[in-house]
Length: 535
Image (tube, rainbow, N blue to C red):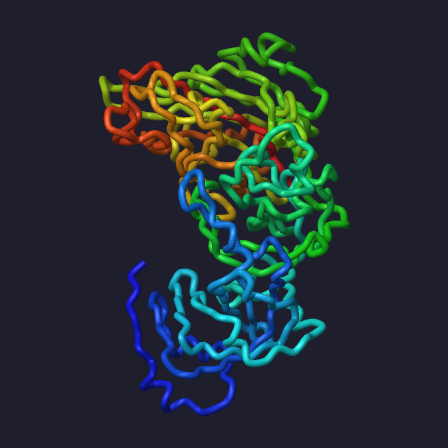
């Protein structure tokens, strides 16, 4: 984004005295610019954040092994009294932010820097000091903005909104199905466990869906005391309230959509009604199902944790119909641990809770000499002829690798989802939450260790391609997919780009492309859940 600086002292000389509205800041700083305020300029509004909440902003990484844990405490959100727009305040020091929810404040922005983005249109005020808060009056509420996801606009960013008719798509596990060993240390979570929380990454996402089939990510920081308590996720439908934000999350896959929502507290999530969405067919490895899968040709096969099985299709384990899942990449199918444990004692792992596909990275592509051609993929086949519904979604939770650094890199990074009604002609789908035609896969984290078979003999810590746990993705199938004898969905690499976790001189992954002759590398891809939902 290109930015330019503005000196607005001469403009301020002509402004009337007294407090201004937040909207007036748009007259000072155009989209895509920065403005340094160099004279008294007082604005007023209603605080919709709370300095006590650990879910105000993502604590960011200095590097793969160091974090800035002050960002959340430095952040506050203030909106117009009528809720028509909001701004984000970033204090210089966490201790200076003592703003509570519903405080009515006036603040002199003299000496502050306005940063206004253009897509979306949002204003952040930086270099805020406590002494600039001229008055604080405790309040007891603000205007109630109730919307569907499709009704959100840029004017809702940094305001408090209640989203209605919401439910959680993936209902197994917690609000943070992540690898607990890499999260910031929390006394109530980690004081009695037999591992050390490494404070490497913060923040993950839970995918929400409304009754119209629209999706939005709910962002949850790792210091939230309600994110993984041993209590199951709410299974119903209702409201989710919070501050609407626009946040990039490189460790999740980058772009999280134009709008996300940050609840202040667990009480902002009220899902008590009956959801209109049901799972038609799915692969979810219910707890207690063990190391077995039902195959089309081989029947029920157990002991899949170590041996795996190639070249057969897997029947769904939940739902009211029959479907098949397979890959043409030559990968072997295993039953593996997932991240859906309700507690933190076992680092978030739940035994036999996921389906893992393991195969050579080069086998995810057809080759013309050294040139990669068409990619291979994962496939789902099902019928909708007898299904009674008006909307259909393809949803999945996935990640690459294991907690072993040798298995967490050199995998295809860019993926796309297509559908077909005959298995021959394929049509591209866009992801619901982001509108993206291609998504980025992230590996799970791994411990610092030497990476064998890589041309190096030194310790390399996880890079930005490393995530915290499985991503959650959702795609809506078109109306023509209803009432069909056969429907196919394919998830496949969209480019020959591979994970660049280890990019160093002499590394075969230096240019970030898969290479035909590099047959030593494997790709490990884990699914906590694949489900076809309808309503």
